[in-house]
Image 1 (cartoon, helix red, strand yellow):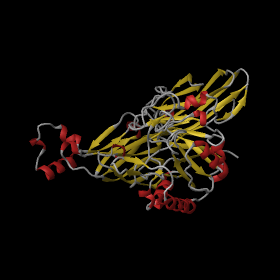
Image 2 (cartoon, rainbow, N blue to C red):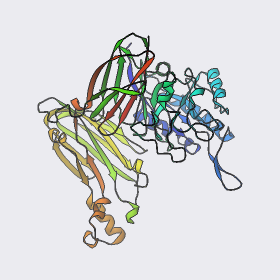
Image 3 (cartoon, one colour):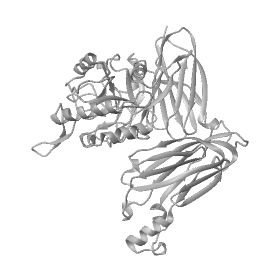
Image 4 (cartoon, rainbow, N blue to C red):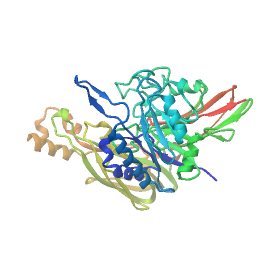
Length: 510
């Protein structure tokens, strides 16, 4: 049976405050993910008598009640073949050692918060669960919450989280930073993914959000991709144990990596030269594919600039991204607020094959009207919440280079050919809306303001990104290498827009 690619978020921290809307969380997950192992967060901040706030340790009656609600929702929303759910929770232990892990059950199990990682592993072994370490590159030890690889059990922790909202745990010199959490940071040697692999541990790679807003699959916070035979708990679980997984930052790159035909997660016996192959389909232009062997980049396929922007003819396939957001800022004295965006994209002389949202909050709706048109209703947050301030959609288009595109958003219409869309990007500022806000709030016309920056800086904006032809977002590469004894290989893929992917390793035994 052939394998299929499925997408999930294995690290949405569902807090007590979000339990009442758990059905909405699962509905949002189903709208954009194939599977959803929810990670209930059984901790809260408590104020000590002296006034200091500290996060709780251990079970509470509230968390036990919440867990029953989570288990019921997981059973209710599981729909094999369409949308698969798993029950899970985050474990911190007594914060003394071991590092943070997410516990997931293939079917069902208890909420158990033992003090130490060895005790947690015993619980997982008895109940058929896995424990997945995350933000591993923080300092390990009391209060630090990084990963101590000496306590790792690769049978019970088959994969590890390389990227999340916290940033990248690949290595101390990884190309992406790990500076989001200023309490738990900074990143340091000892617990990085590469150091775990250097110990000889065989662990696959995933990425997932580690988000705390209740919204699943937050773009740019990490997603996990799984190559599995079918969309069922059994098939996904087996693929997880076999390490047929990889992680992306946000854009959903399809990545296939093989060594002498063996897929990611494999352990193969070879002597001498091996052949390695990479196939990538991105959501934007692919910059490079790096082959990492034992923590070092040993070969690079540089893809940027290898394709022609001009793609004349009747059969053009391309991807086009549209983003909306920005708007008024309180630093200028203006009121800021969330905003609704209604829009549609149409094509004449072609087809919109599919569309995919790059969403970071609740309030998004995207649907196909016909083969030639999609429409949407998006919600953006004000600029106090920068991660939710911009929402986007990636469209895959086919047609002749002279096919006509029509974008209509909030009374603005932009018409251009597919050929023009591939030549450059453009921005449409809603200046009239900014003028009206200045008049309404301050009684000022633009001529009354010393700097013209104020008008543009506070205008909501629509960006039409530069389109990317198929040769730009698709890449294949082959490598040859004389594999040393006991080595591993994995791929690191980068798009020109900064989005990245990391595959699970393939191990070579001789």
